[in-house]
Image 1 (cartoon, rainbow, N blue to C red):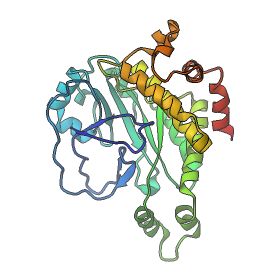
Image 2 (cartoon, rainbow, N blue to C red; image 1 turned 90 degrees about the vertical axis):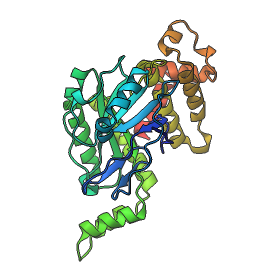
Image 3 (cartoon, helix red, strand yellow; image 1 turned 180 degrees about the vertical axis):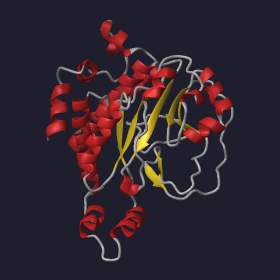
Image 4 (tube, rainbow, N blue to C red; image 1 turned 45 degrees about the horizontal axis):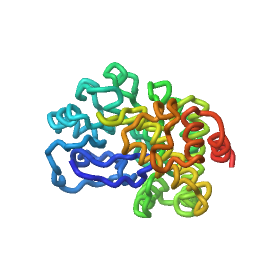
Length: 323
């Protein structure tokens, strides 16, 4: 197991990865840490540390590593660590070690458009019998009819048993865009695909897709917050509450730029998660202010965010979904 630094720590707040990136026979894979597509695979890297951490950590692992590292994975779960399993290959629920407590293991199925080599979603309902929450990790990237595609895939995610959707922008270097264009355009070229891949402001494009995902998830009544993994020192509800604050810290940064107060939410969320305290207990006791960073504005935002209604959360939600 090795330490990682996710490209989007507000959306994927994990610290470690178990096992090397899975090998593949020609399939394109998504690396959720760097949020890029993997087309070729070099020799396997060093496996990393094999000891169980003294303090429980949250780590990411892939379907192949669940099989090859099952004994070590079982030891990590028994020690109170939390696992986010990327189901990028067929995986049966019985192949996962049984969680020691609710929310300790969470499964995400990655999805990206078929233009880039993505595959249709599989069913997620079977994970409930194992006591595991499951959702979809959407890699947002340019594709023809992408708005309709997102509407379709999020609807399918809900009907197939997903309880949440997490959307992250995909990093697409010029090499990847040229690879797809050359494969799709043919000898005569494709002007509309060329404009989409090479003459589009990809950062603005991804922002619009993120906001569309929010509107669709509201319609489908799906959460956009990663609900775990929990650890023995912080349960899933506490993790989800902090992740929701980090999600909105990112959104305020995207909306307001240098004038954003998102850093205040991020600082308070990280302090709350490090404390291991249950935020709902603190709300009930009116004790949120004992956590560093919970200024009056941050406390008001957090309370209204966790309740799903009230100010100032509703004001910023309206800005995010309509602006």
